[in-house]
Length: 115
Image (cartoon, rainbow, N blue to C red):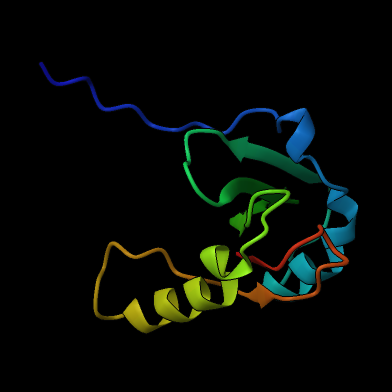
């Protein structure tokens, strides 16, 4: 028997996977032209590898991905590689998400990230 399609709706961020969202403000404002206003972060919880969040700033929103906390093997969760591959798929594979920006400054949320 097949299970019904289940969509992963964003919810509150798990306590152990929270970060200071305000540290992202400058990055998000640069990546999303015209973005300003209140900042909200929710989490998609059904992923099995990288952590995935919904970030809202004003009336704009984007998905943010980062490696799980405590990862020892950085190459297993290489955000730069993911950003490069998703960028290369644009115009070739319509179902690939469109990457917006990559940031390797770990001081923002403790790990490289992409949106």
